[in-house]
Image (cartoon, rainbow, N blue to C red; front, side, top):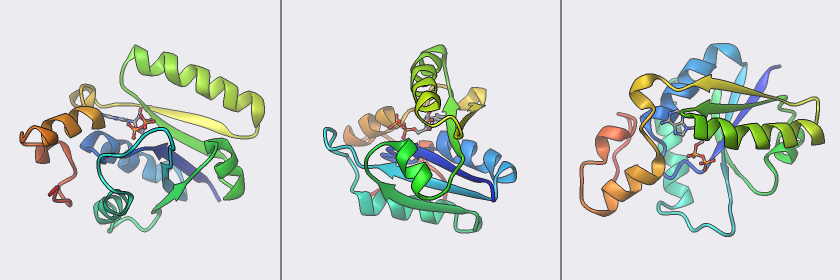
Length: 152
Ligand code: ADP
């Protein structure tokens, strides 16, 4: 069974994330959207909301699941028997960042492959941090998140 982990903060999930996951559905038997618990970062939206929004977005796609994890992504992959890590690439800055993590992960666990999908051009400018800023300052953040969810 081909299991992929799509790790991130998803604070909140955006239409950029949604698009990457939907495009990856035909490639894997199961995609686990894995929300990393980062002790140094406090999230803007609660973990309960972030999980609920991802569930609502993929309600019609039973091969997509969501869960929370802590520790190294690579260790979590081993724990659940996932051989693939899925990541989106927006810009060359993403590439440089991802290259280091991907190569370190490869050195630690050569059997796990990181698979990259290029972001659609219309999503390249989107980031959860920008959506949070727009939301925090009373702008229309709704247009950047999946249709299925309603930010409060
Ligand atoms: P992190 O907390 O690691 O920055 P995010 O929750 O922002 O993670 O994103 C998780 C994954 O989604 C990463 O692979 C990231 O490159 C990808 N991603 C983020 N924003 C977009 C976007 N607008 N379009 C496509 N992929 C994206």
